[in-house]
Amino acid sequence: MNKNERDTTLEEQQETPKEACNAETQPAADEGASEMPSETAELTKEQKEILELKQNLEDTNAKLKDITDKYLRTLAEYDNYRKRSQKEKDSVYNESKAAAVTVLLPIYDNLQRALLQETEDAAFYKGVEMTMSQCKAAFEKLGVAELPALGQPFDPNFHNAVMHVEDENAGENTVVEVFQSGFALGDKVIRCAMVKVAN
Image 1 (tube, one colour):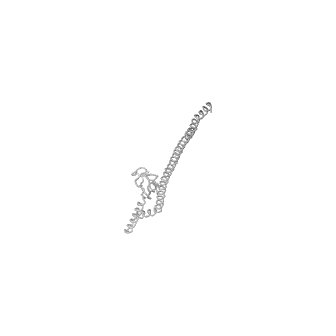
Image 2 (image 1 turned 135 degrees about the vertical axis):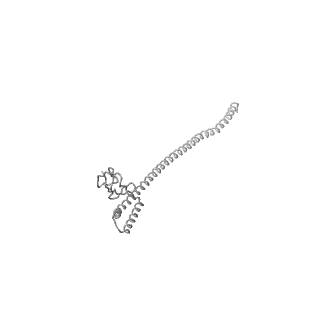
Image 3 (image 1 turned 90 degrees about the vertical axis):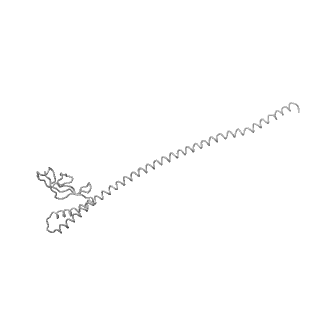
């Protein structure tokens, strides 16, 4: 082997370690390059999960608000229904009482007329008087009150004028005589008083 051939072989041997070194370091560079997109993908995935959680939280809050609004509306509607039902119940109860008292009023009128009649039978008069007291007590227990009439100014809401009379001793439009008592249940007039009015 001559000198030139030895130099060429030596150069090839010297170059080989460089290529081997390059070959060994190349995969390491490739591995580093492949890891970077993976980390980026993981961050993006975490961000997506956070966004999904935020969206789920917003949806849940919106549903909760909707349910709360429905609950409050239902509660208000029920309260109105309860008040309306109670008012209707009271109204029906009062109407029923008024109807019952209306049926009993003729009995009251007859007892009142009986007390105005003169009689020598004291026991009979006492019995009628006691019956009238019981009738008045029953009316009072039901909340029924007799309308004031005699000596009161005439009021068409409470009095029914069937006669007029000129009376200098009485004031104008004053009730001077009561023919039939009037009654009211609370604010409701069951029957107006039948009266005579001075002009």
